[in-house]
Image (cartoon, one colour):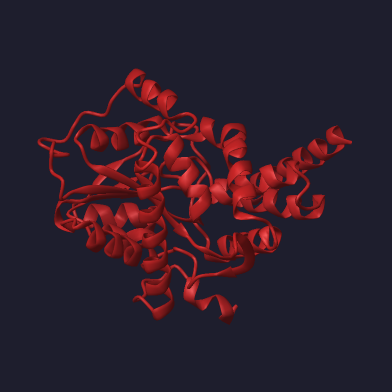
Length: 326
């Protein structure tokens, strides 16, 4: 597994590839946000619904004087998978692509297995995430960016909207209400992340940038996936471009892989944290929030039989879906 060494969960410093990935993501995010502003406030699908839902949901008790209203040097950065949304966006996206016959049942079974493992473990495993990204890149190669964006809107409605954590959504809304920009920061494709950000009424998204030529995916990445230190580089690049003071910014994540990003800001939050992040947050006096119920995903120590059952169930569901479509 030497080829996956750069994705292992140990702390590592930024490399030239992670800096490139971060800068490319920041540039893409700013271009998209600027384009949105030029639409003169036109609502994207679901934005109004998200605002109404946020108003109807119970709000988290606000921290004293935080977020600070009117502080235009502050912003908030939210990890996506298991922080804002249950599960991994790339797996839900893969499920939607299968439904549209972008790939075969064998590949869907692999997505189902990856998602089952992710839900049971409750943490990001570099090997599984890398395998999923490689699968996604091979699937989208040769397709138009505009085509995948259009499909992504449909997939959000089908599989992602119901998986948004209300508690985290309320935290994001608190920053918006204070007049601050709110960005998603994720290893998911930047196009997918941008759709989710728009539908939630957020400012924009930093995500993994897939190379495209003349609007068509080449099957290659710009730099590396936006993971670990690359996320921190993206936040740093965006903050510099936007004129933000990171000491006044906030960041939210569930994963210890995001400690580099969380350590950049003055207000780090551990949301639905994995074991390593919970321990780190407590030792550094970071704030914690856990929106999972008593029936939350089983931890890593789950009996093997339960894991096999979940995988079998996911695969069976995939096969049943395939048969219904015949």
